Length: 131
Image 1 (cartoon, rainbow, N blue to C red):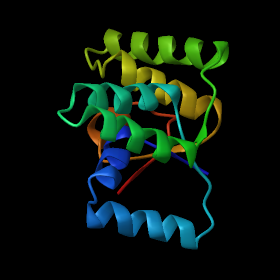
Image 2: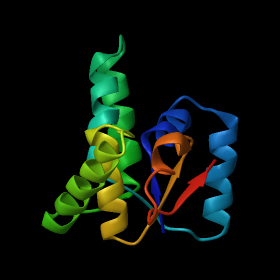
Image 3: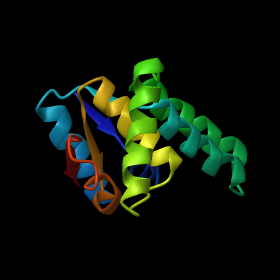
């Protein structure tokens, strides 16, 4: 399984051929696809702020219904808080949402598929894959 970051899902929704090719590669390998509630929030936020709100909310719902949504539980919450505090103490903040995404992915032992390696590479135990 791989946890899809918002940047990848937005690219899929926009018809980016590189994202489509990566999705095809994952499908060919039989990789299960997941995301986090935080990523879902980010997608819905973008859809609700867009000019084509109704259409985009529908498209987000369709995409998310094809994915497993990993639970954001107490363990993931504690991990996210620990990540944010550790980075903050080093002056390398990445933002609350990315800390929460990382906490959820780590809770479930999944790598994050992202282009945001600048943020996620700061978290030593987090596996991530750039697309």
